[in-house]
Image 1: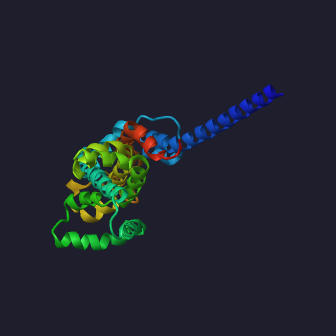
Image 2 (image 1 turned 45 degrees about the vertical axis):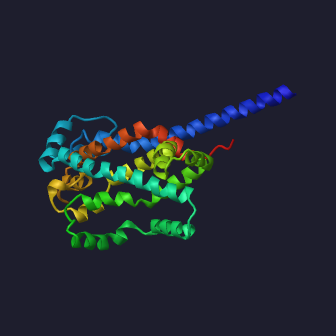
Image 3 (image 1 turned 30 degrees about the vertical axis):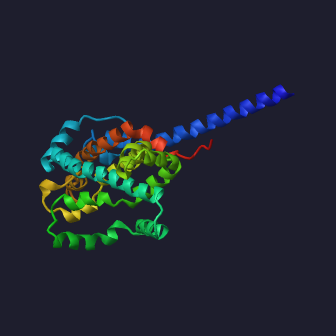
Length: 284
């Protein structure tokens, strides 16, 4: 009787596991399908795209590429996006981890109220402060430069919140006290002890910050005036053309090229993303 119960339990587990894998496979296909169609459309002409969906690539990739190159300097746009995104991501990673470490490991007056205020700023849409930020940049002569797009990475409240939660879960206070007993300074403790331990959370948020900044359209559109300084999201809108003559093939090819760095970033840092999101999920 006990053997039958064990066999039944194993069968139920196998069925549950099979059911989970089926659901995951369906979700994977649903996520990959738009990307696949985007890639296929980048190889097709306008007429073929307007005729409907196709699951097989066509032969207009080269034509679409030359059309894209004729409309916008795509590779210069890649350089512009990198010049904005890389410093933005580095600033967000360092200053967010520094701020989160302070909130997690130190006790000071009005700590809860200050952190509550930081969280409250997450509720304010970015577009709401865009006009005021434009006036601020105009007053200091920062318009049509990359500086106002990069410096905002130093005040990333979402990263501060996530890294703080991770720090409280993964960084033992006793480890910091031992370092202080060895006469390590607070700066040394942060850089040599805290940063390596909380690096999965920093890598996780760096991926999200990289994607956000790489795809940022509104900020560069408002703050940049020179076409030679436009990043990829703004250039993609220029490839589209007019309402009467839209080059869909060239537009899809530009979008396909623009998402390649994001896919590469996810491929290289996926292990950090998983470890960062699952902290505290299993209790020992």
